[in-house]
Image (cartoon, rainbow, N blue to C red; front, side, top):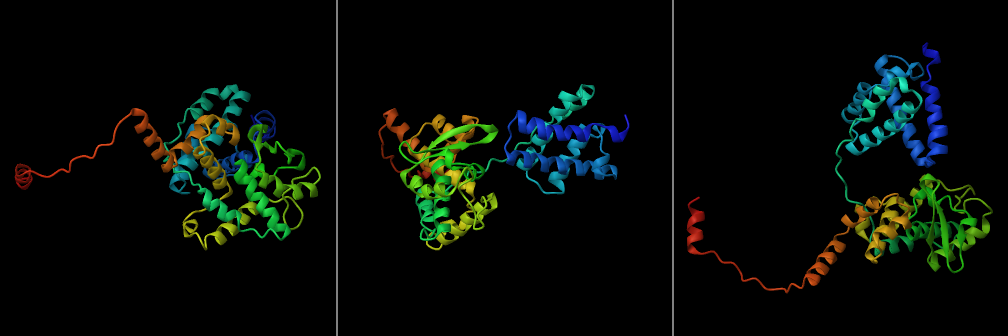
Length: 334
């Protein structure tokens, strides 16, 4: 097969346009992440061949090439194991697409799919306590249009636990601002869920919804839909202001996703079942929601106290231990 007729680039296009978008219903964030990973991978292969990405063929996709790329990520790009695993997941997804369309190289693709992920250290989830969130929510100047927008946006992020992309996509038709107040959230994989709204959130959203017609309600100063970066900028600004009175905020990097984590932990602290919170946040698996249980020390302490009471054990003050002369003599002889 001649190189200029090799189907690699055509399969790349079909993977993103047909498989990820239409079949899997992947979010824009997932598509961007996978595209970035494959760009890095193809560039690495092309450099190894001293050619261009356009010259790559299906024969260049090998287990040796993937393993070399993963080593490159850690050794030269200084990526952590978690990032390495994300890049590997993107390559696996693409290679599985190749396997469906090119059975002649099935054994080669199966070897790539068998590459294991690397054990990564699980970091503690960052979140804000409710009093810190309240301090941030108090910062926007609600006497101004942008201040009212910012206050409503922060309320939606915390009230619903929405991902930032989900929050900025909310349109007037997604909202019900009279009892029972709720918002329809469109999440990953074209899945939808209904989240209840506090009366304060509904009141903050009402003027924004009235000003928008079948378009996202959160707009920037130029009147166009606000971006993810715009939301991050807004949050950074108000966290910095709140940190003047709450020094603990200065030690945290507060992103929009931290507000999602904060919502999850607050729901757990309120006593909601993990399965309910999974549906509230739009998690695919309850195992994902369960990570928040390992995050909150206060909840662990409460659980331990409840276990103690349930077991019917009584607290006894232990007698203070005092060393005997024989013990002292023994230790002195060591």
